[in-house]
Length: 98
Image (cartoon, rainbow, N blue to C red; front, side, top):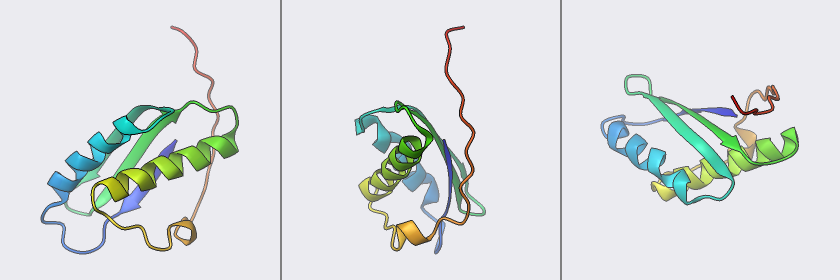
């Protein structure tokens, strides 16, 4: 799953905040291989993760909840979280052993 976040306001401490955000999901259950990329100039953060669920709906719920929990763990706010999603696209891939 991929969630794109946009930070609004001063970006002076975004590097430090993104480091804390990258560490936060390790405390969450069913989140595997969390990754974060940050554009320090634009304030865009791309959060990707693998979640251990059986349906796309569960994956979307788990990914959104994990991302929001990570944002809150860094002291960030997510007002109107459910109303801010503009687009949801899904692609299912089953993981296999290499």
